[in-house]
Image (tube, one colour):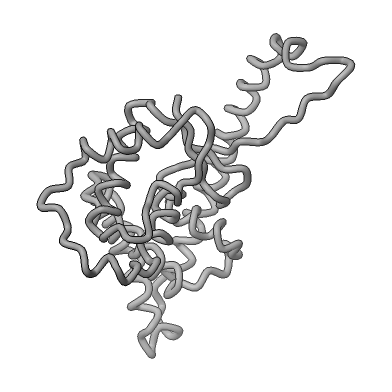
Amino acid sequence: MDLLLYLIEKDELDIYNIRIADITRQYLEYVELMRMLDLDLAGEFLVMAARLMQIKARMLLPFFEEDDEPNPREGLIEALVEYRRIKKAAELMADVESLSRLHHNFRALYDGNQQQENQTELEVNLFDLLRAFREVSLRPIEEEAFHKIPPLTITVEERIQYLLDIISSDKMRFTDIFHPQDSKLMLIVTFVALLELVRLHKISLYQNKPFGEIWISAR
């Protein structure tokens, strides 16, 4: 449900009028990315992927409109709407709790004679990262890269050290950690190394607007 809502909000779709064919195609692309990256989460999304494929196939049948059985698309939309309502309520409660904690530190964050600039930093989730990685992986590889012999081994540990060396406390773009000449294998290993650094709390990821550019900084 999280991935479905992410795709709907990213494309600013009407949740009551989603195109099953389009949303299924995008959903499967993300699942394929998870599978390619060997993420343990991929299996958890296969059930929903199968459900979307079933709905898509059934809606293509010529006698679908005359079928007396409940419309599977409507059932999915109802589940999405309910899930979104619960998720928004949970986020609101979390926001209230955060504001309560910040209330006592307000004086320290505000100078009465000078208002400080406050740049909004939004949380980056796995789907944001997959979206950004998909865009990077679709970039054409520079021609000279085809004339180079790739190294025999590329380890995640080596890419972790590479990222630690280039990522400073100042921010840098997500796309800057990938080189135009990187092979597909190099892109994948670099991305997995980035996920590991996030897990180890070595780096911070954020964006300044929903679905915007992803920035990285060292913790």
